[in-house]
Image 1 (cartoon, rainbow, N blue to C red):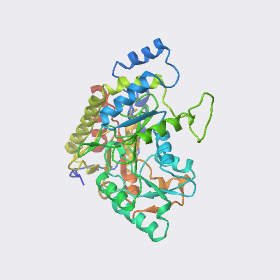
Image 2 (cartoon, one colour):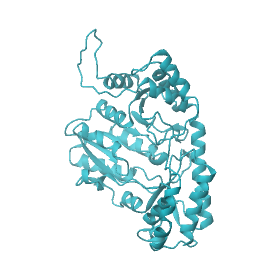
Image 3 (cartoon, rainbow, N blue to C red):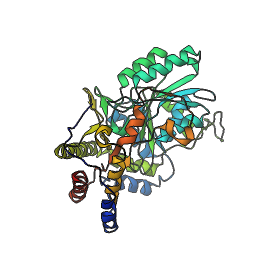
Image 4 (cartoon, rainbow, N blue to C red):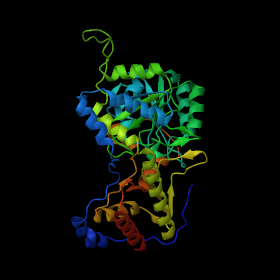
Length: 406
């Protein structure tokens, strides 16, 4: 684990909040991760208007899919209306249905899990490991052995790891286990476009990979996602399912249940402009992370972060930090979050594990170390936009300095 040595960080009382709360009214909001346009997005959108390609599909969709394929070095891509829809279709094609199980990372956003329920299946939650904070291979193997002993291994239709905050999961180990048990892998790479493991892009290890272009992601199409695969048949079927599964007939005929999940030509135009600046955005996000690390080192704060292991390249979509509870105790994370909020600076607790969510109460969970719970309890996401100005950085760094000095 990466550790920054303790110098002096004191838990403070409530007086600071009352004293500084009024200052936020006169300050512009510093967002956690806001859209950052490159300039050429309007050109592609204007072309769509000029050519009247307003309805779904069109040249921008084809071009955006080709851009994704080229960048991620993957054979096939389908541009869809959301990352959630992409996961839904990937699980559907993988054969997930009523009474089945999907082994999914617990420490994630609900969009990784809800599509399992759309299909009538049951999520089985897997704990995180300490390095990447992603799916723990040991807990994954434990789950598979358990279901094998119960004679229910055939009901497990997919394994769904997540590359949180732009940090690749331990896909080499996860794929070895998945192949051993013969279970397909659907990668939730919604937050990790541009991240790699041993030179291979996240989203390209499993049978399917999913990217998100929501408004807060490293690049955006306003709203949207993509499904990628090395198999042409997978993406051909995905495109069909995403357009209401219409059969090849002069009239409307449907032999499968489909969805309305295709990306529009307008949104894809935004995506084409965003792809032109993706590499620059990754550099800016990584620079943000390095700047925070330099600050916390200077302040002598005792924190952990996701470890960029040998062969790993993270896009650092969000800078996520973990405060050592032995140093800071309960409540420190939340006091810092509120202090930043008093200066109109948005920060956010890390994802609440899905097995702790009310909607998934009572779900099966594998992981004796409960790393996901611990990381959630003491972790915080800091403002990480690629468009942060020096004035905004000054406010962020000043607030963190003032807080830790107390």
